[in-house]
Image (cartoon, protein in one colour):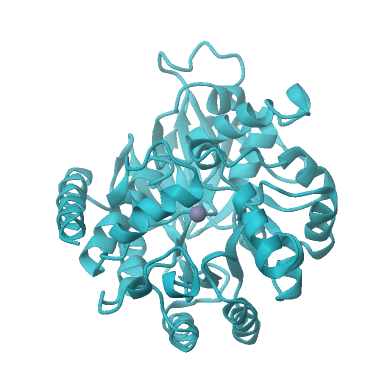
Length: 459
Ligand SMILES: [Zn+2]
């Protein structure tokens, strides 16, 4: 067997985001194969064998790679539309267009979404994909292929909708699946693509879209399917006041009680948004270990409200960050969400005590890993964990005079990424992707966005 190859990174500040928030003002990291072998203050130990690369990271901050816990890649093709609507009106405006997506469109959109995140320090991404129009091709396969080719660690949350217009739902009928088809296709996707191993690059979760686009049977049977297959569960929850009203009218209870009644609370579940939660909802999430994907920009863009992140954290609820789909967060970046999370949460009742800079970085790294059930593998820089990490450049005009590198990363301008490693493999260098051609992706996504707009205009 070939000896494991080592990469040595030295002379950088390090924010490990371990349990003690250990930081080094000037330290080193040793990567061996796809793992972090060691790290600490000062230079790397002498006498290391099989060192194939040494990086002088002076002027940089090293952090764990960012973990994006909620996104809808296909929306890369419908950015900048319905810009002044709330969630339900925005969905009604966009569903007729989304219903025309096909495999080449979804593949291009996934490349755009992944590229934008990767060049901003995301090393693990989730795509919650729930629009499967009839005859659209192998959309799940296209998503998995795009992530694999770009080298980003990936969870495909295989979504579904079975509650279309004829049942009083929001999506057009030809964009929804039957209960049986949705469950069968989800099970097939898990069997084809899910990898349960420690260093898996691809996982699959069962992810019916939301209480208002999915039947109670699909929620309940989806949860049973996930547990039978040993995979995680994901959905949207408690996003808006309108959703809360919908749940009370249709089910006679609020969203969290509805989730409890359908098997959707548990440590294998994470939910996007969770904005409109009362104290007993938060207690139920804490008691069951249900995780939250906090999406501050999307919640603001759709005027959904402000999630009670400080209360969720105080109760012990796992919380990560999400970009959400780029039809409601056109930037598509996660590193800027560290700043947005801190800022918007300080507008809530906890004011300046809501979230600090280390807390914001934790949400975007370890918090996300915990929400995805992968806290033993990723989310902090510790010996034995997977080599998913980012070197942020802190010695340029934008950041060099900011006293503290973590404050510079969270509060300053979007920091340039000098290097990003996933599973020990470098995928970004000096802000450019090494695994894909950004300019080609920009052209393809523009062409596919226009094709989608043309097809939708024919209706
Ligand atoms: Zn979403």
